[in-house]
View 1 (cartoon, rainbow, N blue to C red):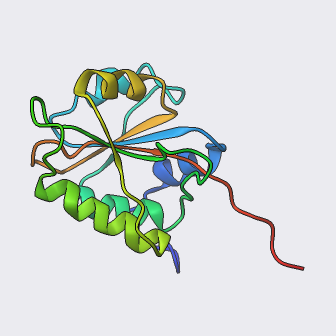
View 2: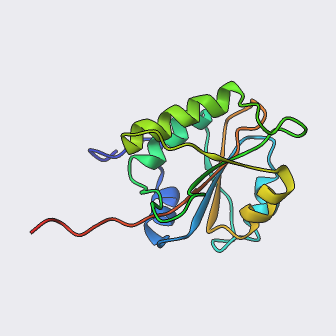
Length: 150
């Protein structure tokens, strides 16, 4: 255990988050997402796991991970097939965690299922969660940490 770091963030996840640079994508996926096969195609090349609900994982990750303020798609959700405007409870919970982490409303964009798979394959890494509800899949683009004020 380390002070100030959410205990859900294991050493492998911390290493990946630290290694990522501005513009790299992180995928946080539910248990039904083809995480292992997709993760093999990412920059990291292997799957990371945090066995917790999606909103808890997002809260932990965003406690350290800045979102990219220079793009419109820094936070994205997989849209429901045939119902792109419907936002299920799992996505509403994650939206609340994003807004809390950023201290303002930061709406996610929706990404069609197969387009989401393609974005995931180009990501830096995939974290598979213990989320069992459908459509608990999210993409986050890493932003920058500004220098300390002088």
